[in-house]
Image 1 (tube, rainbow, N blue to C red):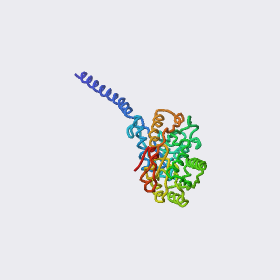
Image 2: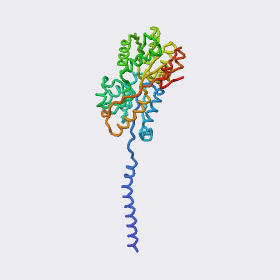
Image 3: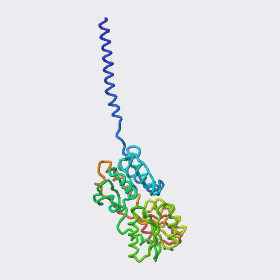
Image 4: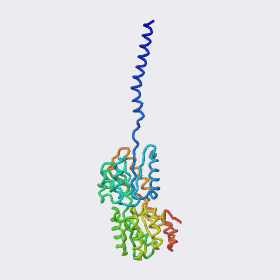
Length: 337
């Protein structure tokens, strides 16, 4: 009887021990099975405002969804904005790089320049990557090399077309104003091209520079005092971010305005001709996807939009007493009434 109880005790103890060993082995395996890979993080770096960026973010995320990515489910986003104040860019860039995202989406060349100075390893995608070779961001458009790639928003002959539209909207315009933002690294080349096109057309150019939002009204006042016939606004992050302020100030001063981005016209500007930035940001998702799948950014050739977008604001034209010719309206991709 005693031996039988001893055998039962040994059997129970052995079973418990075996169970204990099984748990001690199984628990770490279960724990390891629940440790999921870190979701990739994309850092959105903008020189504009959150309000302006809303449609660009929406189009980028739409492109990501079509490629199988849903924000918050299988990738995360960090959003940072300088609100048009370039002096905030170094600290913002330092913060983003310190967070070690998988990809930096630098919305424009000014942000790409800052990000490239801060890191040579984190991939940088820029949907509006202007003058990239000259700025030292890429080796060539076909083979960028390094850690920067994206979409070039300018095409040959665009400045001449903007001057052409300026003279079409204000027939006989002989003095054209340029609203510049020359601290933006992509601005000087634009200004030089516009000045060269104006000289070829025997048009006088008057320039006024604004490098932060507080300078805008004063710069437009200079152009108004010079009695320019029409103002061409350069394509920079700060000028785009404050498109509504520019449009209102120009209208108050009775200055017709020509832009490169349709967002300015939506904000109250007169006419724009250039690339559709919404498409550029939508297409930016392709570059991010390829990088997340293992392609080096330097192996992704720079792309160029194939279509220019013409937008006209008839409400602004009416307020300025300008009649937009039916032929011009018929060519417009977007008419705001």
